[in-house]
Amino acid sequence: MPNFVVNTNAVNGIHHVHDENALCQHLPEPEHRRSLGWFSSSQGAIHEAKKTFNSADGCKYCAQG
Ligand SMILES: [Zn+2]
Image (cartoon, rainbow, N blue to C red; front, side):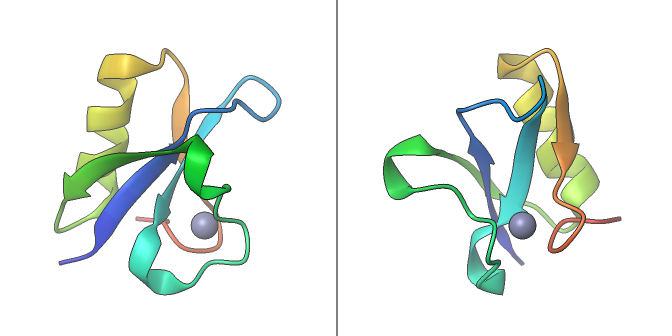
C-alpha cells in the first residue's frame, strides 16, 4: 500500500496529499511533509489529512482516486 504524506504548507488554501512512494515531482520538501501512514487509497489518506487541516485534497498527479 502506498505511504501518504500531506504538505504542511497550503497551496491556494489547500493541503495536498501525495503518495510518497510515487516519486511525485510535486512532493513538498521533507520539512513540509507530515506522514499520514499507509492507506489502500488516496481517499483514506485525504480523510486522515482533513482531521488536521480543514482543506485537504489529493495531488492530481499522484493521489487521485
Ligand atoms: Zn503528488
